[in-house]
Length: 340
Image (cartoon, rainbow, N blue to C red; front, side, top):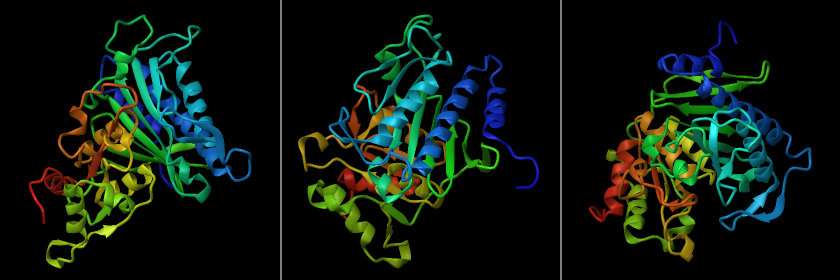
């Protein structure tokens, strides 16, 4: 790489300069997250060589089997975030309750929700996986430990959201509400370097991403949308290409760059999936903030994701996300306004 590279640290500092009241705490918090990402990336890349692959023999709050890397990544994220004095409380997809900041550490004004390792069921198949995070400003009084109230804020109140994808390279994508930026980890000097400046997703794509094995369990609106997407009508760009990895970070990242739509609707295969499968706090909200900043759209099929007020830490929700025109069309089918 020639010339002077813009690193993640420098970019964050430049962003914070736009806020004269900034104290440096936000920069410190994102630096902590990037450090955790580097540690997780290193261990993901060595997973087949050390005893860190396979099932851990435990389940999380959602009843899902935990992988060893799930628990490792969760531990790394918590250790990286609690000591810096930037947070007052945390929440993780892998933990049933809020994660308080230990008394021996100072309290800050931010809260963080995260999915430490999205797509972990694909680890042993060497498929891209990732870490997702979301940051808010606390709403309870300063100087006291944060509470669940600080975490249950609607997505439009996020001040930052991002993800790290561990694939052929490790890349961090984040937004603070002023555009979306991607940084690739350069292993030669251990820094995230700006590689994707001001990402804009296409207004319409040619890809749809959904697990069609659940087709028989969807409602009729969702079935009609997939039938429409697969119908051969070359003059309006159909059929759409089906591309489904089964790792939200990987499917979302591809569609963000190339255009397209990711759908994980509710289904009636089991009672706990009737409200959807993905989590509002750890997956839907951060991805919705990112896609909107890139010019896309995110919905539960009926309403904007970022307007939904969370009712519980592990609330599940349908997710329809991607290029604006594609999501609008899917909403029309899901709402019964179109049948073909």
